[in-house]
Each structure stands twice: as structure tokens, then as C-alpha cells.
Image (cartoon, rainbow, N blue to C red; front, side, top):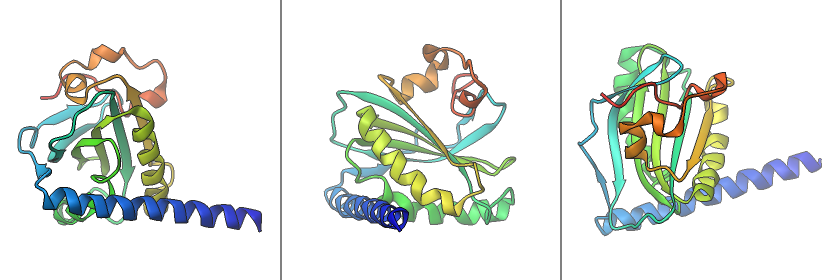
Length: 192
């Protein structure tokens, strides 16, 4: 009984966070503060676990300063999409609908949308202002993703004090992975 109330409160809290984000995203879009950037599109990222992901979109918030940079990397697998290229092709434009679910969260600055057709893993590599804000968003996002994704495929990592583009150019700046569960988010080499 108490667990049900706790679960309902958590669902209500996450739903309220997404609703607030959607409202703020609408305001940002109306004021021209969001855009899709072409700079990284088509580039490849090779991760320390041996997987490779291609950037298929970048969303950027304009006119927002970053005083406390944080890198956020999220990964998940959608069973309905899997490794079938046709479904990935369909999912890419549909995924744009998800923009209000992140762009209005406090501290959001940019997101690289990544896909790995070989494994079916989707990733997001974000620039955030404030590691705590990044973590708050990631907790909310992963609560939404877990029921929709393969069991155990949803993961996130927040790395404070790191600019995402520095990480893409110089992955060794944060050291090498020392644990196997760190390999999924760490880059093996600079973005190609």
C-alpha cells in the first residue's frame, strides 16, 4: 500500500517535470532559442565497450550561459526498433517529438542524438549547466524509458566539470575506464 503511494507520487513528480519542460520548450521555440545544429551530424563516436554510434541530430539551446558544465550520457534499447534499419529510419523523425521532454529542463544546453544500427542502442550525449540538474533530468528520463526499453538497457552517467565538445575532441581528458560498467559511456577515441 505504501509502495503504491510512493510509486504514484514518483510518477506524478516525473509527469509534472515533463509537463513543465514541454511548456518551457514551447516558450524557447517561440522565442527562437532552440535550433537543430548541423555541425556534428553524420560523425561517428567509438565507445570503450567497442560499440560505434552515429550522430543523426543535434539540438541546441541558444542564448543560455553555462557556468557549471556537466557531461551527461544516456543509453537505451527500444525493443520495437531493434537493429532493423527500416525502423531506425522511421524512429529518427518521430524522435523529434521527444524534444519537449528534455529541452525545457533547467540547465539543458545541447544534445547529440546517437544511434548504433548494429546493436540497436540509442544514446544521447548532452551538455548541461550543473551536474545536479543533469542528474535530476536523467532520473526523470530513465523512469520514463525503463518500461519502454529492454530490461537493463537504460543507463546514464553524469560527469561534472566537463564540456561535452572537449570530451568529444579529447576523450582521454577524463581518464580511461577502470570498471567494465564505465565502458558504455566513455569514448575510446576522438569523434570522427
